[in-house]
Length: 217
View 1 (tube, rainbow, N blue to C red):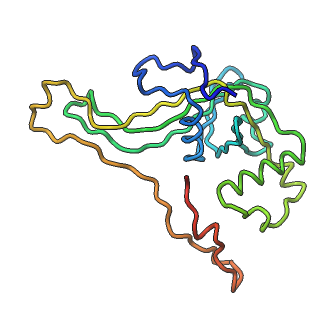
View 2: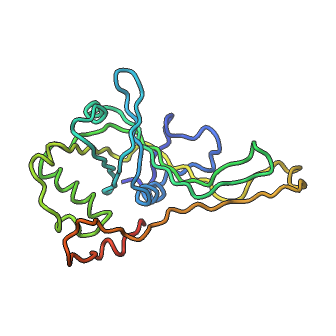
View 3: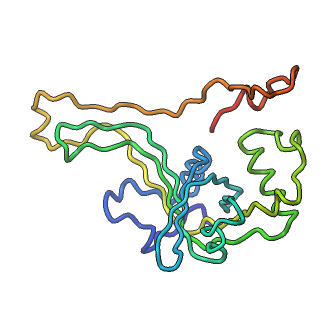
């Protein structure tokens, strides 16, 4: 498998080419760092974008939702666009024009394929849960048939797309560096808080290790 995606007319960057990345290591790293994604579909000629969680297994990315979802039903065997974005900082420049943001993002294009085999669907859902919370899935109440019927899992190959990364300080016009205006970066991070137990937890149920030590890579 090639360790780089080939730039296409859809995936190449029109501006700031230096911010574009097509290597799988960079793309995979961003996908693995942020489970929240947005998936764009075309339904009856109109664009729809829905938020959901994604997870990566090798060279494929998966997402799930309700089997009753019009977006997911229409996405089967259709072309979709999946994006993941991470905000790392607000970049304040000496002019409004050069204000920016330090971000990492991925945009992928491909055909959404429905996971129809029941056993494969269970495996994908187990991988999704355990990917966030190691070893949790097998501690849960087994899925009812209706649970699986109500859930659709879609996947697509990571073959077309790119990452875009912006880091560093403001990029002002050279003359503006002499202006008495504060410029710099306000860092932004996503924090993991202290777990809050469900008040209906049974007495004596302990906080599991995968919750106590939860973190995003």
